[in-house]
Image (cartoon, rainbow, N blue to C red; front, side):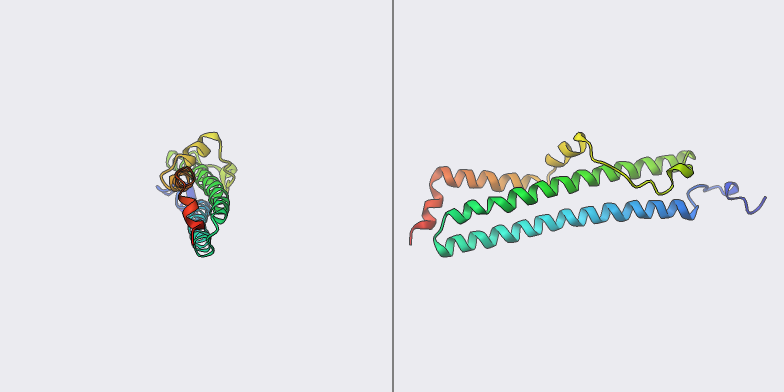
Length: 154
């Protein structure tokens, strides 16, 4: 039968529903990556603003307040990255099933991927999250060395 989709050498990869599914997963992964980048941008902006205010006002306690966005955005970034890894794993599973010819109707538009502990640990140790930890370490070193007291001097 010439119109039978299973006669195509690329079936199921050339099925519009399958390509729509792959596009859906790619869109989710892209949004998660963009949100992760936004976390870093907002964190850096807020920390720089708070440090500027602390220096101008000679108020070292404001520097301590700068830890709040570092911790909040660091946590959000880890969760965005962990969820992105979970969706990348789902994407690879779907693509592998398409290549193997085992992709069936039950998998169409499957888009639920929950990060497990492995995803969260990987994300927390990611090179893109480490600068959050470095900011906290810089704060602790500055506090222990007495550098924050320099802000109080006029």
